[in-house]
Image 1 (cartoon, helix red, strand yellow):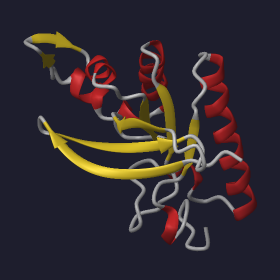
Image 2 (cartoon, one colour):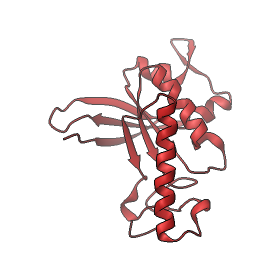
Image 3 (cartoon, helix red, strand yellow):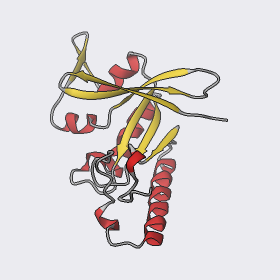
Image 4 (cartoon, one colour):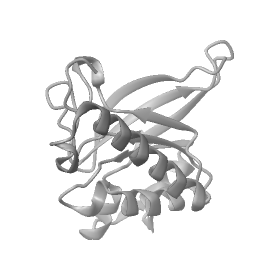
Length: 175
């Protein structure tokens, strides 16, 4: 049986908040890998942020890879106001990470913005749907996302359904 265990640790580095996690491929094997949530990196790059190590410019992905990180967590929002967490940007960044040998943990928020214990707002496109329509839309959306990744040749090692869903999911307190 495959079990995914996640341990999140907050870390602030160069004005950017990184979430570092340890991913265990099986509970029994205790094989841990280091990973980081680098979802914000494309936005920072677009805004001109430059990463350096040893005085030389490198991409954030290269720096993390050289530091021994093996997994990248990427947040995906349904229809974000800015493109950074939308499917096109997330998939393009996943392709870059995959090319460097990273495993991908895809976190599908099922929201147009941050989803957390206090905010589990379903996407605007789904606001007026009945419950059966919502379930169908969630299925179709998830299927489309996974097909886009598959067609790009980037298969996530793990997919996180929702984010911090203990208090509900996709606008519903009953999950």
